[in-house]
Length: 210
Image 1: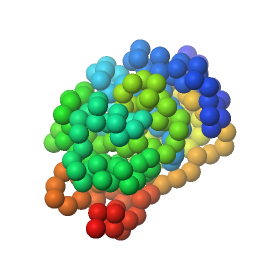
Image 2: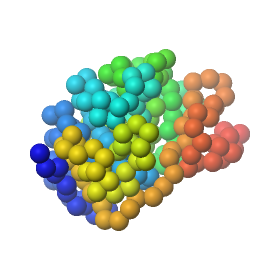
Image 3: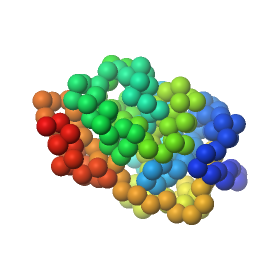
């Protein structure tokens, strides 16, 4: 089956994004540009879709899957309130490349959570990614468009070569995407814990809480 590729600009029309949301609602996988590289979206509330995503990537369960949301309001209305430190960091760095780990009030498909039950979520700077979550009415997955151990996709052609027709739709931008992965911070304790160094320097995170 041929992969459906839709060339989009920085501000795609709503109908194009609504078609991608329909793919997600039906349990499909959508590849889309983020503020770093291409990501893979599924509805994290659908067990079959999450399982399909994990099998496609060769990803072990228990690792958890990063999520993106349209806004802080969407995070807290769909997943539960962030701890006070997490809310401070969200207000300082969102939209942007800071992923926050917290204990959600709402349970999603188990494979989306880490083994300790936490979720990792951010509001990206990329408008396309935020609009997908906004139109769908809930956060979506944002795991990189690749198989485990393979370099993530920087172009739509990379997505096709690595993942083929398992992806229901590719929202493709011209050229190569470049960027550093998001910084991941655990916000559950009295002090932030750096889980992955990334685009937001750790010293900026600490300074914002001083």
